[in-house]
Image (tube, rainbow, N blue to C red; front, side):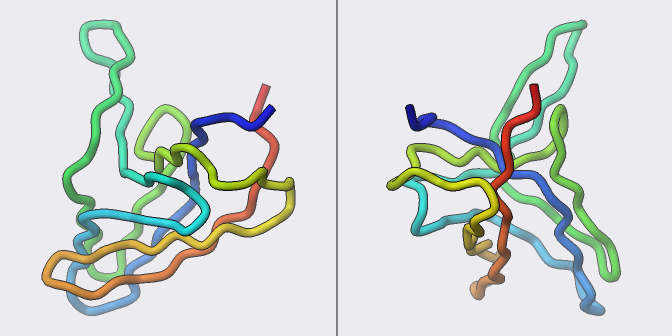
Length: 108
């Protein structure tokens, strides 16, 4: 059975001299892709959408379980472990960056 929701983890590096601000994401493989963050508030884990993700010059953002991550909703087709999925990150002010993620089995 195909899961209607998945998560994307990885590291996004900014090797430019100027900050990069990601304001959205999309992929031909999913109906919807969005940036989210999980935080503990008053002892309760809460997830919220991130309107933007700023990455400083020569900095990086780490997407990981329990922190910032991509929510990958409603895959258009089954994804095989080891295959790659392209994600297009939309930048504030226009333009985009292309990232590639490897499909892995969910942690137990």
